[in-house]
Length: 397
Ligand SMILES: *Cc1c(COP(=O)(O)O)cnc(C)c1O
Image (cartoon, rainbow, N blue to C red; front, side, top):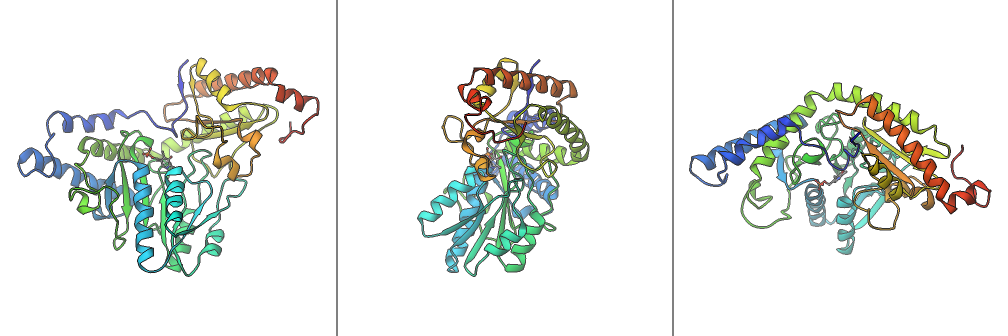
């Protein structure tokens, strides 16, 4: 059996998205900045796509900027808010300890340029409270950036409440909604969002394409210099096919959201109940305030990478820690942020289900993970120490 259970890393493109792209590769391949017909047809297509993207988010077309993906949108959102803050003498930014590196590394760069960054603690259930944000806001705070849903443990943040706090205090609010777009409802008005990043390949669109929503009156600075595309906010010839694919994918995902959520939640809970039976294991992140397809566990006495590779041998694609930190020896900053000790954080497994995952596949995954965890524990000297009481267990049996 082949099972793809790493949909938080990327998703398979949908037929609808592929079909929406093809005409813009085969026939309407003109440069949207060109004045002749096939250029102007491409221009009309992306302006129509902008309008449709805006409809999915509850904003206007003018508030959408197309980017090369989620990372670029995060960089541009944060650097723009920081530039605006600096102009007004406000150089304090609030974010959280478990953001994606596209956010955290951008903040690090700003710290080197005289900004002060407060990273809020995350509760052990993987959620940041709006009250924490309220308490951290100062006179000189120019931006709050809190992700909508975490990419590793899938926990969903109280975005509307955080947005309301920011609006009341007159501070810009950015959310990295890369894991949420197409999977959770978004309404930038009702959620008081000023800046929002999304990425097409996380909702069955193409890789290398994303969008940044910026509320009217929130000036963006360009991260890429060059031509005057995207109202001078993002230089470079527009990726017309990808924009068309992304738009079709987002519309499709939003249309089917209710049905997908019901299907995925049932499978997610089945998988969680199955894996909870493994002794000395624990679910990471809140049991219900999480993305419908996200399951993330820690197993004591296990090396996550070994687990991943043995599951791959059984045809199952999953992830351990964050894809971005694979290859480094540090455990996931997300698991450390929710208070998992180092040795346990190393034994984590993320399984993110997709709309076409079946019950049969979930049962096969439960069986395979249970078997592989048992196998690895029997080979581990670390596990032996736990068994003979030389080291204390972290989780209960
Ligand atoms: C994937 C992801 C990103 C990066 O998006 P890219 O399009 O791959 O650059 C940023 N934030 C979160 C939460 C993500 O899951």
